Length: 146
Image (cartoon, rainbow, N blue to C red):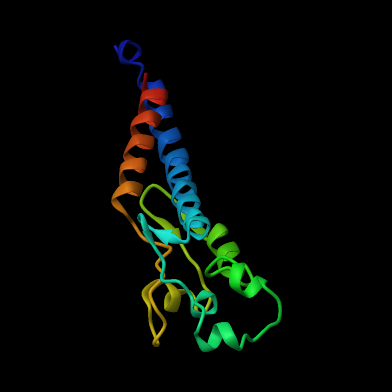
C-alpha cells in the first residue's frame, strides 16, 4: 500500500523543497536588490539625483574630489561598499526564515532616508519581486513535483 503512493519519493521531495527553495528565493531577492544599484531606482521609481550631478549646486561647483567621475559615478556606488554588502547579504535561508542583512552603519540611512538624507530605497519587498517569487515557486514545484 505504501509503495502505491510512493511515500519515500514524497518525503524526499518535501525535504529537497525545504532545503533548496529558501536558498533560491533568497538569492533571487538579493539579485533584485543589487539590480537596484544598476537601475538607480527602486520598484520602477528613480532615486533622487545627487547634488554632485546637478549644475549650480555647491556640491557640483566645489567637489570633495577632483575629476569628472564625481558627476558620472552611479548613485550610492561611490566606493561600492554598500553594493557589495548587498550582494553578500544572505545570512539565513531556511524553510521558516530567510534573512538578508546589510550591516553597514549607513545602510538604513540611505534606504529609509534618515538623518536628513533623501530616501534612496534599494532593499524591500515589492509587488514585482513578489510576482517573480511566486513564478519561481510555481516553476520549482512543477519541476520537482511532476
